[in-house]
Length: 464
Ligand SMILES: Nc1ncnc2c1ncn2[C@@H]1O[C@H](COP(=O)(O)OP(=O)(O)OP(=O)(O)O)[C@@H](O)[C@H]1O
Ligand SMILES: [Mg+2]
Image (cartoon, rainbow, N blue to C red; front, side, top):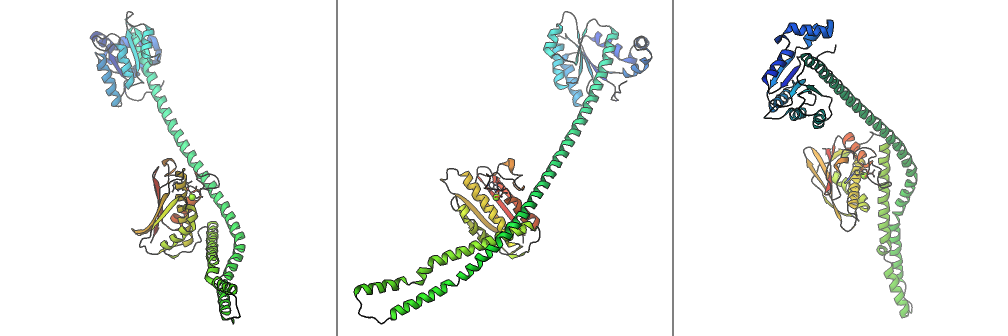
């Protein structure tokens, strides 16, 4: 025997005829009615199980004399969390809603309600009824005049069907909840696996970086030493030129013709050390700057491969910012103007090379965002960088007039290898490395504020 959900089954009778409502009460009201007669009926029909059935059929009856009233009772019962299991609804109930209309409305608020539509032959045809209500498995049509036992049987079986359906619904809900839990766990697991793969990739890149750094270091040392040797050239050339000029001026003048005088004057004018060395000095200084940049990069690559072992000093972030701006000039100068506001800031205990690397990444990202946004190339964007000191942090803000970051990807930009750039232009590591440096290595914060179509600002906060 299927278990019930505890409470008595609640049955609603909707009929405008008071005598019929009283009949229902007698048939289904159990103790209210002629118990002896009903018990006899039970035994005829169900044999020894009759006693159990009598207990189950201990229904709680409610009545309504009009469709609208019945509908309201169904609605309130659902709201109160005590829905009816069955409604016996008369088809004709003038002057209000008829049974078909009433049932349609009831199902809108309680789709699980089992309905017995009580109809005389002259009412709707079966086809008309099912067409109006939809061919439904919640509906039984009972022809009037009905037999008492017919009503009891219907009430009995429909109430059990209702209970079973509720139990089924509970099981389905449980299964759906379990399914959601399993999906969550699988998603979490996939995320952990992806993080592990990223970590492995980073490790591989770290090894590669260390190898490249090692290979570059030797030739770089040669270039560096030669550049230092060349640094002495200007002094020697200057001395030599001065000496030549002096000798030329002091030469005992012979009988010169006008042409010789002119050549001597031109030679003396050309022997200007500054003019001769001008380009050399500039090229030499640029080459030395380039070598310093490569050295810095190699240093960073080494730190990337040997995570965590970084030295920290008191660093002037304005000065670090100046370096980053100098290194990135080529990236932004064509598409944007860079405006800097150096604030009054105290020194910060940090690894200068790493912080410069973060600043480089953010300026390059800003420049890329501007040039991607401005596809026509006609308008120059602006990158505003400013430093300030706020609430125990030195804040460096990088604001650009690029296309902004779509909210759909905002939570991914710090993921390793996440990039929206074409192959060759971005590897998706800039922000991942910056996050590691600022948050994990320096206990700072890196935040982003982006408005699609307007621009983006990254805030780097380092504790003082
Ligand atoms: N200022 C910005 N404006 C708009 N989008 C940005 C900005 N900064 C970062 N992004 C988005 O975040 C993504 C990840 O940036 P990240 O610096 O980590 O990688 P990348 O620039 O694509 O490549 P990499 O820095 O390794 O060369 C970018 O591809 C871009 O979509
Ligand atoms: Mg980048």
